[in-house]
Length: 272
Image (tube, rainbow, N blue to C red; front, side):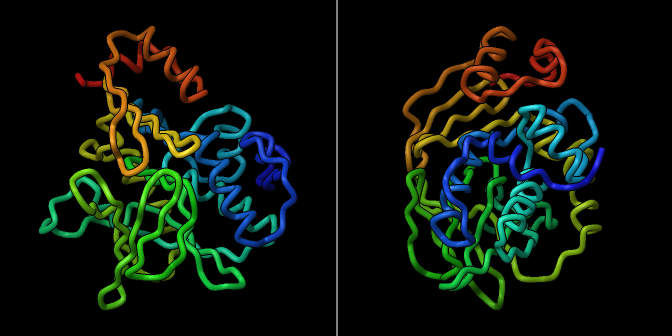
């Protein structure tokens, strides 16, 4: 299995047919198409299956296999697509804060994000942050509110450390923190191994899926299904009562097939 990125197959997977040049319009359109077609999902981590970051493996799983993945998989794949088109892209690592108390110690660098250089300056692209999936790239500029169809975001910076926050019904909530420390492939391999194997990690303990289509978020956390509008306001929520209902959601709402019978997945997840 070759390790060459196959752009045509990727574009077919996300349903993208527009003209491509390395500019903001193309970046924004690709970003939105990616998160609409390829959901964030933690199935492999939950099931104890290995997670590879090799391009060939990602194409086999996500593109040909019509699966999703988490940040390291999603942003590695997206980076390859952008670079093939002609974008200048640099990957960095972040410290997740989404579920942390404001005064909690900083966590390890277990999130991957991308900086894309455009003619008007740098932009943040990130198609893999489960919990509050970005539907559009954001300008890498601080102290301004940036609105997308799915939400409102704000970057702040202190002593070279950037924080990305999302506006939620209860106020601003920090997603993750990052700086521009150079990352080697081995850094992502180590973080990916930790994320997919640590028995205490949220992605190992929980089934998490998220897809963003036309500004609306569709989420599963274990046995709870929620639909949100922009700003995190829930407009629908219900418990997933059995494996058949989970199978329908995976197939019809998230457009993926699990790697094992869905009964095995349902048996591994906790209550809503």
